[in-house]
Structures are given as C-alpha cells and as structure tokens.
Image (cartoon, rainbow, N blue to C red):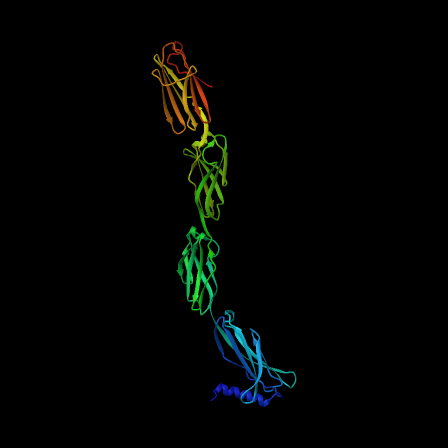
Length: 416
C-alpha cells in the first residue's frame, strides 16, 4: 500500500516516462534516503540519492553540494522495469558539517536541442559534538583598576549546547575552582594581576578547557622603600646613592626626594636615584622618596645615613683655676665614637689621687672628658686634649695661666 506522497511521485515518474525524451517536461525531484540526518562527530555517514532515467542512453547526472567527498554512481533497473541512477556519498562527520544543507541535484539532457532540465532535493545534517573553540573574554577589556569589578565570559561551540561551565584560577602551581556558570564576576586586587583564569565547558559528549587569560590590574604605588649604596657606614666626603623602589602599575612616573632635618623638610631631587657626597651633618639628616603614577602616590619610610668621620674637638673646651686645683673639660665627636686622653706637659695623664679623669657619653658619636688637677701655686701646666678613633685623631691645647697673672681665668686655647 503506497502512501499519498509515494503515489504522487510515481505518477510524476510515469508521466515523465510517457512524455519520454522528446518533450521538455519538468523532471521529478531526486529521492534522498532521509530528510534529516543526526550523527555523532567522527562517525561515517552514507547518503543515497536516486533519480529516474527514462532514457537510459541519456541518464541524469547526479551531483552533491557541497562536495564532501567522492561519490559512487550507478545505473540500475527498478522492479517495474524502469531505469534510475543512484549516487552514494560517504564521508566522516565533523562539527563543521553541523547545520549544513546538503543538496542532491539531477541534471537531464533532452534530445530536442541542447536544453537541460534540473531537479534537486536537500537535507539538513545535524552533527552531535563535544565543546569546541572554548575561549574567555574579559569585560571591560584592557587594564582594570584595582578594586573595580571585572567580568569573565566563557564561550564555546557545542551540540547540544554546553550544559556546565566551571572556572579555575591558576596561581603559580596552584589551581583552584573559583566559580560555575558561563559568567564569572569579581572585584580585582593587586594580586589578581599575577593570577591566570580559564574555564571548562562540558556537555554530554565531552568537555574542553579554554586557554588561560591574565588580567592587567592598575594600582597606585605600593611598598615604596629606599636602598642605600654602598650599604653600611659611609666615609665623610665619599659618594652615596639612594634608590627609590616601588611596586605600581603602570610603573612609577615621578620620583621626588626629600631631606628631613629636625622639623625642616626640603626637596632635594627628582628621579629614581639620588647621588651626593656626604658630610658629617648628613648623619643627622633623614631622607625619603615619594613615588607617583596616574592612580596615586606613596612615601617611603625615612632612612638615615651612617657617616664615618675623624674626631672633631669642640672649641668649647675650657679650664678653670682656683687656689687648690685646675678643672678642665673637653668635648669631641666622631664616628666611630672616639676615645679621649689628657696630656700634661707632654705626659699622658692616668687616674690618681691628685689627677682625676671622668667621662660622659654624648649620644652615639660624642664624648666629654673632664680632668681635675690638684696643684701648688707654682704649677702652671700646659694641657693637651687628644681625641682618637679608627680614622685619625685631633687635639686641642689649653694654656693655663699662672695664678699670679690670671687668678681664676679660663685657659687659652690653641688647636694642634
């Protein structure tokens, strides 16, 4: 029992056969095995197309569009003794074939003149496949300011469509799951710029990972600090270089140097490096740098130089004389901290009952030494204050006047 459609096709074929090759009749459409084909990617697909051949000497020419592979054609006899041409197209299904319209075209050449008649039938190919071309897009594109929101979107081509999305964060050798769903939104931090992200797309036929993406995070200067070269103590008169270091994106665009002396702050230079020759006073000053980019600025902690210098004896040294004794004091500063000694008439003084030495430390680099001499009225000594450290020595001579000439008067000072 034929269906109405099959009966109609047969009537068309019989009509075409009755008309024969002499008339310019419209040929019936070729027959395809199926109107819709659903296959799994990677499997072999065979499509069969047949068209009536009323004139075996002029059989129709069958062609496939697109031409996915070579086809095998043959002329065959049907059960009703009529002739037909069949063509079989065999190919391996690819995800690129999904949704393609495949057409079988029959071309008839008529005996009367060079006229041709064509007829065609099409089907749509449906290919099932796992996720392909999985990728991540970033919004907003370009650099992202620290603290702002960023959205990552996972895109993938799959049939049936992707059913599950999973997000991963890579930090060095560590990989962590950070979310699910096609979209991942979060606020970025400075550390986000050193991390990488990727997504995994999955359907019932498999899964695929995207390539990793890395965010470019902008942030103001952080961890600003100053390095001193050479490190450690610096000899007075030598050169020292201060270098300002800061972590920022985009990189620091402006460096400014400041010197702090007590409550006074002065700008002393620009640029990442500051080079100058140190003096004794440099050891009491502090320095810091300011790093700035388009998103903000930050100051470093202050640094203080350690300056090495020879002892310097203060002109404030003095001697007082009374009837019973002579009292002298002498102050010196140096780095490393100096030692002090007294000499009377060229001889080094040591502590005794009639010659007493006492010392007082003045900070890290200063020393005050006092000498008391019990004497007779005839004593008019010449005193020498000598200060020494590893870099050298300096001295100050104190001339004590005689009691008859200058009773109770301060000693005369001369520097050696």
